[in-house]
Length: 131
Image 1: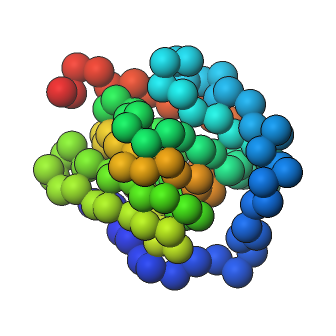
Image 2 (image 1 turned 90 degrees about the horizontal axis):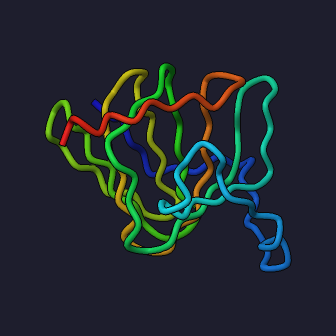
Image 3 (image 1 turned 135 degrees about the horizontal axis):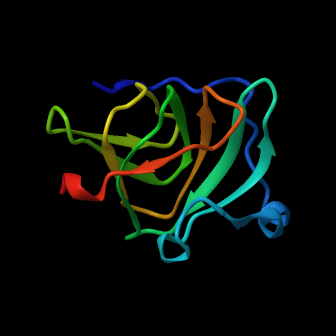
C-alpha cells in the first residue's frame, strides 16, 4: 500500500527556468520513456529531481528499498499493481512507496518531482510480466 499526504517539505526549492538545461536523460531508464533528472545527490541516500512529459508512463517496476516522491508541478498517477489501487498526486503531494511494491506510473501532465531512494545507488527492477 502506498501512503500519501498533501504536505510538502520545506527543503524543496522551486526550480527556475534557467536551470532547465541542467536536466540529463536518466541512464537507468530506456530512452523511449523520456525521463530526465538533475541535482543528483548520492549521500547519505539517492535524491534527485526528475521530470517527464504528459502522456508518458513507466511500465511495472519496483525498487529494493523504500522510495519517496514529492510532486513539485503537474500530476502523476501511481498504480499499485498488488492491491489494484490507483493514487493521483498533484503539486505539493507526496507519497512513500514501500520496498518491493510493484507499481507503474502514468504522467497525466508535464510533471516535475523530487525522488528519494533509501539507497546510494539507483536500482530498479522492471516487472514487465506483471501486466
